[in-house]
Length: 197
Image 1 (cartoon, helix red, strand yellow):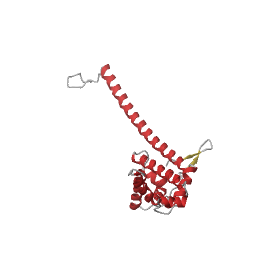
Image 2 (cartoon, helix red, strand yellow):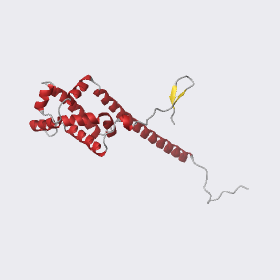
Image 3 (cartoon, rainbow, N blue to C red):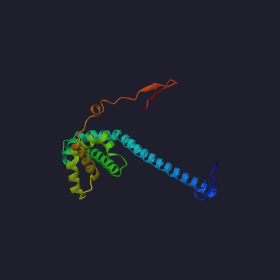
């Protein structure tokens, strides 16, 4: 037998205004969640794109040549030593490498790229470049009366050296020796598809 309506029993009837408010709240919540997901996706993509662009810039013949020339210098090279080893245009190579590391330092500081990615891609060349150019950079700071000369390169090299003190660099071929490609299955159309398991 149905229970008669009483004041103590909550009513299941909902007026149109309450229903509209509920639908509106659900829509706003869904919109906020979607916007958050899109912002997160955009940030990841921006970081990835920035890193890819940076890697491409390191593949330019000009940078490759400049880095090779800088790495041929003795550790602690000064201006005179650079000119002696690299010739009169040697400082151009030094500037290109320094400015590139400066840019990377600024990008890392502003979290446009991650320290792990910088470490994976560039830690060796950064540390070696700084060993070669530290005296030169200090000399330029005195000559130019500008302590900010190569400041972000200096900062970046220190971050890399700090990491190496905590954990010695291990080559990828050793650190990731157990890595295997995901299993692949033959799809119905004959193409291969990675197994996500």
